[in-house]
Image (cartoon, rainbow over all chains, first blue to last red; front, top):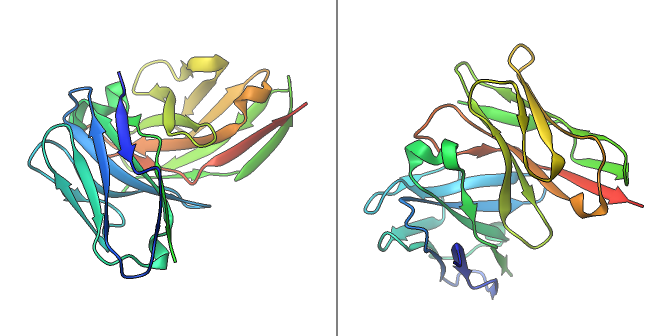
Length: 116
Length: 113
């Protein structure tokens, strides 16, 4: 049982390049989330998907797009990477947005992205 | 909107000593509160949560937290820490079901021999 799998684990991009961070969960969870983690800033929500077919902006959505490809997969795309997007990105999932407080989130191990 | 403040960015402590990691929240309505732990190079794991009922909540690895509504706090405690408790600890809040968690900035706990 893998839980939440993120790929790649590490990536270096040049400014202006694009890339997609992949996330997949095998727990049949309905809701999925993307957070970024920066030193001294904690985790900040980028986008979330309450259920398949829906996505909503979080606290820091600018410069990102997301796709909920199916129930298992939730990808995060950087169209034109900027140094300010250097961060560690975490994907998480929960059974459902309105039940996430009861069962908690399951986090992936993160993608460390550097934009030079 | 709800928010959390973790009052200490770093807490150094000796092995077998007690520790308290402080968290205050701001919200005008009832909240759900959580503590997550992040070991080096890993994702976050749920330590414990307060939803309702008893204000003293016990979690994994010997940690506990107390919800104090009058002081809007949810401090995490452990009576005797181990080297393996070295990690980043995050307090998080949700105002109700149906909202994504809002995390604090984290407290780095460093346990030394």
